[in-house]
Length: 75
Image (cartoon, rainbow, N blue to C red; front, side):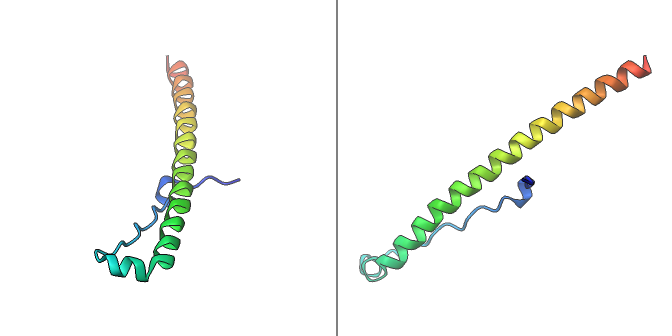
């Protein structure tokens, strides 16, 4: 499973909440759907960031090991 870079992790757009109580009631189903979609999308965004963090740590560990080998060879 390929892991995306952090730049590939796109945060979801924050849902709009009207100021007017009447508008909120009039569009309740649409607003509820937007908020539920946001919650699902933000969870996916967090998973993407977590995967990128894990990938970056692994890469940093490998680079440190490579650097150690380089230093040994140059001594």
